[in-house]
Length: 193
Image 1 (spheres, helix red, strand yellow):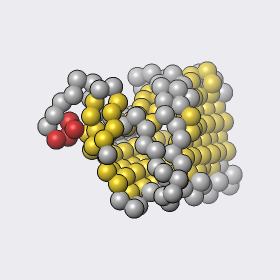
Image 2 (cartoon, rainbow, N blue to C red; image 1 turned 45 degrees about the horizontal axis):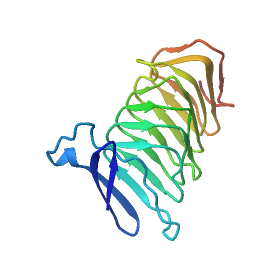
Image 3 (cartoon, rainbow, N blue to C red; image 1 turned 30 degrees about the vertical axis):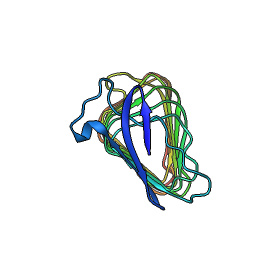
């Protein structure tokens, strides 16, 4: 299969359980805008595919996706990205609109690099929520709301919409300064903060 986004050509192929994405730039070609996937639509006749890729633009909606793993940059342009398993974003993430990341099966949601964009980010999972890079370091997020099993974050810069962190199975771990212009709330039950 071939998919295009902003005149950049990307190679996409599928098996019965996975969809792979490979940008043409990874093969030595350098399109002027950079190769990205605009959106992957999995036919309703298929069940629970995993999706992997090295660069993506996600515009919300990923019906029937079991797990999502993106090794390169990601633009989250609004709506909800929902999986039954884990979501892994290894490269820098940019918020182009308010976005919700959800794992309905308590999979880990891991944003390993930076997250920037003047929008709201919500994370919901019964598993671990991890923000490994600076969040809002270049452009502060409007707000950040997480409801997860455990929560771990490096430095956060959040605007007037505030910060709300709730954990249900473990503690809240802070690895850097949290700078919040609005209200902050932390609820780890009987677990450590």
